[in-house]
Amino acid sequence: MNTLVSEYQNKLTSPEKAVEIIPAKGSIVVGITIVEPPAILNAIAERARSNGFEKLLVYTFNPQKYLTDSLLKPDLVDCVRTRAWFVSGPIRGLVKVGLIQFVPSYFHEIPRLIRDMNVDTLITAVSPMDKSGYFSCCAASYVIDAARKAKNVIVEVNENIPRVFGDTLIHVSDVAAIVENHVPLLESKIPEKKPEDAIIGKEIAALIPDGAVLQLGIGGLPNAICDYLTDHKDLGIHSELIGPGMIDLIKKGVITGRRKQLHPFKHVFGIPYGTKADFDFINDNISMESYSADYLMDPCVIGQNDHMISVNSILEVDLTGQCNAESISGSQFSGTGGQVDFVRGAYRSKGGKSILAFYSTAKGGSISRIVPQLKHTSVTTPRVDVHYLATEHGIVCLKGKSTEERAIAIAGLAHPNFREDLMRKAEEMGLL
View: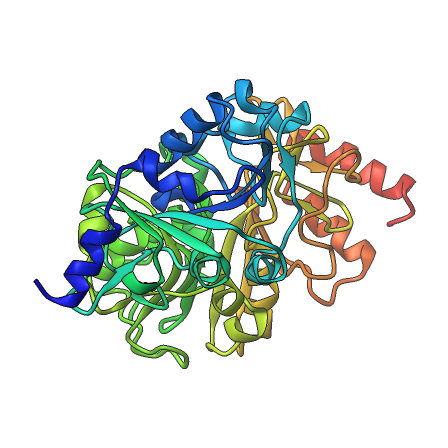
């Protein structure tokens, strides 16, 4: 038995034994989405129920099923305090009543927040150890920064976690405890297509030149454009997320990375999502590289690729151009994530474009997503940062436009049923 295998075996233990190293008043960072470690999380939850913690501080981003079904159960709030940098569906109710605290953050700043705070333990799922003694955390994001900052690292080895290149490696010598748990990965599928997706997707695709570098946010709208890019050539990826639409374009030879200025021929991302087939394609694929958010999502880094195209979703916009992508009726719905990072980075790029897409109405057409002025809600992307806005009624560029020109252009993106009222409100607000 070689030294690395021996060290692995010496650190291999049960989940219950592994979590004993977490202090009773400790703090933990949980691996992001795909690398949430279920066995470790369940062991921590059981320890909490047995009065094993006085106060456990948990940091997470967009928590998924494994975390929400264990540590984030309401019965544990007396001893488990949770801070979320991004809010997912299962915890919105807990955030609304104050049982989980939201931490507003630009994604590219989260690694620094981690480096500047006291972190007792990182817990994360990883791919199996390679012959050199390295695990891959798959989604570098902030996980790799926490691995280097934490006093202890507990890993849950899962043979289904893709081995990803870039800056994802954690060495066995830097790990305090190892748990093995080979469970299927949580899969994410693109939502059912809406009729508006085809209209918006075609309009956005027409703005994308051959050789462009893509960042696509999650959800149906940003991914709708992939269906209309199949005739493009030599596209690239520099994105917070990589998912089914992009992977399909790689398989078809549309995305090659050939013309990228930064990491040419490499598909660069923070977090993978999708189906088992997508994860299998990513696994041990040398063209796939994941990096820390403070590099990947730094606007100055993003802008180094020419023709950077960023496409993200928003919930509503007002007539001045202020965009809300994270709250509904004053309640936190999601978070800033990497939207503003890529909005700013794409505009820094030579020939780059940032596009914020949305449906013009909600609730069956009864509510306009274009409002006179944002009230009782968050401003995710400030008006001065907004470049392009897109709905099923068109695309407008706001850069360089006056407040009057903006109001007219934005109102034109609204459903016809709401345009007259919006123009009247614009006049009352002194925009016309």
